[in-house]
Image (cartoon, rainbow, N blue to C red):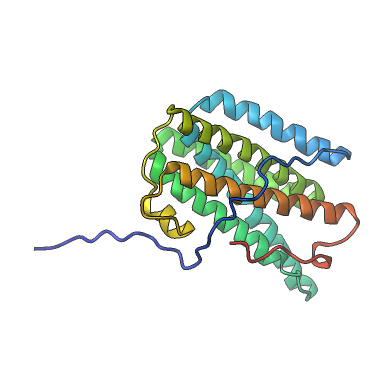
Length: 235
């Protein structure tokens, strides 16, 4: 008799999310680049709300397929720059790649909860293909604006996850048990629920918001990222 044993993916790097972080903080756009980034994100938010409405899980899944791109693009371009110029990045390559990996774990968790349909998977492929190439060019043209854009994207993610939490608390969304991958990754208690998962994911997004606004501020001062200490070690 053959026995098939299902194994739960357990990432080597796990951590406790800092849920005490301020999730309401907003960076007021001042420069033209800031306002452009802010209004672009708001426009994209309107489109996503029209499509997903109150399907919070599907909305989160789509959000995470996009949110995992900027850190990888930024980290990759800084990595290539480091190779070309024989210089260190001040830890920013690691910080941005950690962000990308964390967002990927958000996606892996949401997929366990949502079970996307074929047309949602097709939408993910299309959105990622368009967004990756667009953001790649965007970052090459203006890292300052690109990081500000991501900062505002994370602010919208915080709004979305806060709405998701309220829907859970009101009973509109069932507070199902947390998937094993989330329990392993965030070191959650074995009886953790969806509410616990959304709470730690929201805290992660708040950290990404601060990291990207900080990166944009560095560029606004006419400096390179390597001239300021990278916020590594959070994940």
